[in-house]
Amino acid sequence: MGTMSERVGTMGGNMGSPFDDGVFDGVRRIIVGRDWDCVSYIKIEYENNDGNFETREHGTNRGGLQEVIDPFFFTVDYPTEYITSVGGSFSHVFRYGTALIQSLIFRTSRGRTSPILGHSFLGFQLGTRFTLEGKNGGKLLGFHGPYFFAANPPLRQFNPQGGNGGSAWDDGAFDGVRRILVGRGGRFVSFLRFEYARGQRTVPHDHGRRQEVPQEFVVDHPNEHITVVEGTIDGFLTSLRFQTSIGRTSPAFGNVVGRRFVFEENNFKLVGFSGRSGDVIDALGANFDPLPAPTPVPAPVPAPAPAPAPRPSPAPGSAGRWPPAPGPAPAPAPAPAPAPAPAPAPAPGPAPGLGPAPAPGRAPSPAPGRAPAPGPGPAPAPAPAPAPAPGPAGR
Image (tube, rainbow, N blue to C red; front, side, top):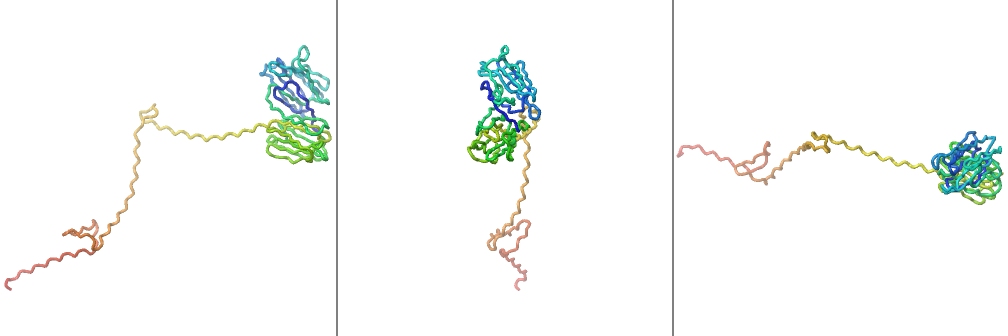
C-alpha cells in the first residue's frame, strides 16, 4: 500500500509565498537558521522509500535580512526514530509588518525533545506558542507553509467531495502525475493508485481497497499534465474522468451515477490528491499548481544584409582623399557595325509607247554596266541615198 498521510494547517503570518514539500517516508535532519527577529531559514533532509534522501530549503541563509546567526541542528535516528510533533512560537515583527516564526521545537517517537531552535529568552519561547501534530499520532512526512524569502506560486486546493467516512489523507504536491489506476468495488470506486512525478522519480500513493482489476490512465509527463478532474458522488465516489493539457480525455472510470463535481483552474495542473477512504473511496479532493510557462518560439533569423560594394580604386594623385578625384572618363564602347543594306530592285522600264522620248539627236544612255534591253523604239531615220555619179553632159 502507498503512504497514508494527514495534512495539518500552518501557523504564523500570511505573507510570503507558500511552499509544500509533499510527502516522504520520514525526516533525517533539520537545520534552522535565525536572524535578529525570527527564524529566517530552514533546511530539511527527507528520507525516500528507496533509501536515498532529498533536501528542501526555505527562506534565506545569507543576504535578505542579515547573515544567518549560528544554525541549529536536530538529527533523527531514522528509521527507528521519527518526528511526531512540531512546536514553536510566532509573533508580529514590526520591521517587516507581519507575524513571523520565532522558534521551533521537535519531538520524536522516542520521547526526545529538541532544544529551542531559533529565538528564546532565558530558555523560554517568545511570542504565541503552537503545536502541530496528527490527530491520530503518526510521524512527520513533510513541511508546508509560507516563508518570507521565496516566490513559489500558490497551490489551488479543492476540498474533498463526498462523504465523511473512512480516514482522511492528503498526498501533498508533486511535479505532476504520471499514471492513475482506478479500481471498482461493486457500484463504487474502491481503490485509487496515483503515481506522482518528483524530478526523475515516481512516487506511488495507494488509497482504499483493491477489489476488481483496476483500469489505468497514463500521462506523458512532463509534456502533458492533467488539467481537469471530474467525477460523480452517490454517497461514495462512483466515477472519475480526466482531461489533459493536450486535449485528451480519459474514459469514464466506474459508474457515472449521482452528483457531478469538477476540479478545474484555468492555466493550472493537477499535482496531488486528498480525500477520505476505507474499503471504498468516501471523498476526493485535489491540489493544483500553475502550469509551467510555455517555451517561447524563437524569432525568425533575418537574412544577412548584402555585402557592401567595394570602393573603386582612387585615381592617381588622390591618395588620402575620399571621395577620390574623378579620373578620365572611360572611352565609349564602339558602336556595332550596321547590317548591309539589301541591293535595290531595278527600276522598271517604261511601258511600250509611254516612255519619254529621248532628247533629239541623242540615244538614251543604257544603265551603267548593262546592255540596253531590246525593245521597240522609234524607227531610225533612213539613211540618205547616195548621189549619182557624174556623167558626160548631154547624154
